[in-house]
View (tube, rainbow, N blue to C red):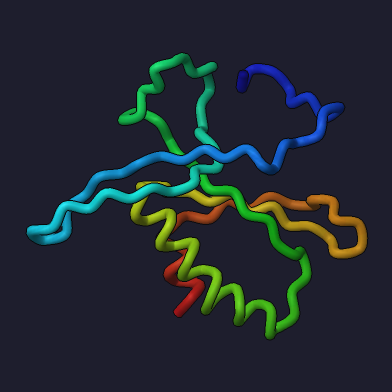
Length: 123
């Protein structure tokens, strides 16, 4: 329920997964593929069946607040290719990145990045 604050007294179950199946075309070929979706942005509580054509799907990633130049290269050149493929093919327009300190693992900042910005970062 997006109108309520999250319950931080309960741990997050990181083994829960939410997948969507997508259908598309590439020239004369029909494609059917699945992708893990991290969340849905909504101002109201969603009810089943989900209004899939009106949902704003989001991707969530965590990373280091302070990165060395080498770590940035790995993220920009390698990880972003994976991230862009997942987001572009599934229609996800925005990625929420939680940036954490290595010393304590606590998120210090959340950065919203568009799928288009990932391409620019990787050039």
